[in-house]
Length: 334
Length: 221
Image (cartoon, rainbow over all chains, first blue to last red):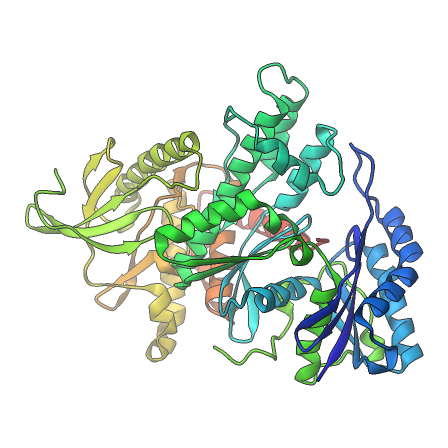
């Protein structure tokens, strides 16, 4: 029986999760929300994490009804992410690891998303669409690595949505993407937008630039129309490249993870594509799609179980830490 | 040509079309049917399908000018979004060929052929758009000549940027599909440079730029 605790703070969400053998005992989260029209700056975000982390740890321990001495391993997000928020959380994780005398593991954030989503949905060997504010990747497992088959060539899809929301001064509460999704439901007219797909790769920066010109002169189209059109366009690009990766790899399962993954319209479109191919789609809701501590705790437990630990001098953070850099020692399939 | 007149059999469902096999005046023939994608907004779907069908046929025809083997186009039906083309029955994909353990010794020669073929395409400004080892065929085991297929995302452009992205897409697809194939890609680039004399150098410079762009994407989220 392994009890692990995970600390996540690579972007504007601070999360602490406690997991016992794949069962989530506690998974509280705090989100740093900025005023409409503004993004979150690294330094302010780091301050937010530092101010909240002690109380959040108490909340997690109380909710899980776990005493620190029952914890086997401390896990934290090593990267990728924003520098100062990552470091703030890592310092805290190192401190509790020493206070409690427990081993420590640095976890790749993307691997955390994939392993958590696999645990929750039971997907065996899916093509993974990992979509968030900082990442847009199409991933498949092969020979001990999560290999990146498709990717954005410029900005992440979530970044495109966030910046679009900022442009229109939409609220960042609870998240810009959520508000775009709600507005899009009332969109009627489809505005043609650049649709850029390069094999299994895609590009979102051109869509943003194009829509910037529209957003300032909103006579013809409503905000709802723009939200609707943006979603329809960028999600179609995601579904198309995912389908191409499925055809290329001969896969019959798709798993959607990352913050953008809780968008119901994206899930619907993916399900429609899968229906045509006789494939299955797996997705989770905002508890596990959006950054959280449990995903770091769970991925860390998988690593702990096969004897992977992070040595003290390696418990640093790295802003660039690619999904395919991690050797997946805990999976034994080909 | 009415598909209902003779038996056409669905043999593959790719990411954007259904592929049927049959015969065209006695010759083995494939029908590539771009069916409506229901997940896509109908207006967007129509635009994409029509555009891609046109681009695909243009590129296939232009391959002849470039001296690159590609399926011969027999017939096009714009209303049904059908392309009828030559069915290459004796082809093995480069993906399967590389994964076959008996072909290890020839891989450098194969890589050189891949580089030459893409060099020829690019010197005629044909951007394939989806260069993967699944979209290259070896016929009757002869690795000195490749047949390129699936021009569904192709277009004609002379810019080094688009050619660079084309090579980048291939590099990414190769590294993910065939782990440890870095050295093969080096061979591909070398023979590419030899064939695409017009803007090969400029394209490889762009490729380096594009690689950095992609690398940066490992960020927050």
